[in-house]
Length: 259
Image 1 (tube, rainbow, N blue to C red):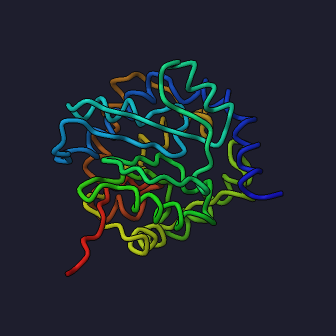
Image 2: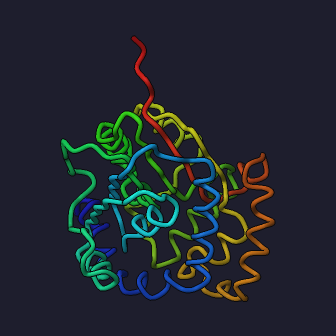
């Protein structure tokens, strides 16, 4: 079976699980804290921001853009899972989200912001082409925001591979994590320049970001989420964060062509 079709079938099967587990109060609070940190001093000098979210899931990118940018947001998103798109429509029947495959998507339109949230590891064989295509669709002063599970040491690599094999949320035959070095090299080859990168996949991320992966850790008050995140915040920019994080959050721009 084609890997893309297998991934689509896999997501159609687990869509309801994602829908039920990934929108809890702890998850929403943690996401707000993470993106507030990511977008610190990031701005777009536009009256209106056109946002595209490939592999959009439930349309989180729309919420993020509207929360952290003051301008009017014109949003469009797509996902290859019909079930995921159906769940997104339940949350907001008016949202412009439709079924489309990121590996074959083509558009002549230009966007001010493109968000890919936890998407590339689902299509690792096509990730370079996806990034190149996204780069071509960015306005010259636009930004690409990519959130990606990663690893940056051998122990984490082995641990993540084991989790992918044992947890039904993942499909080990079609998806895999990127090393931080590999991911950053993909950016470079795709014509993208890192302008901001942080490594927040630490304690709070492990406890609350993916509750269907570690359901036993999804406990505690909202005040506890804030306290643990405050500890992570002190580490996510330095060597500890870089080496120990299981996720990387990046803001990128097009490389400027030399005359």
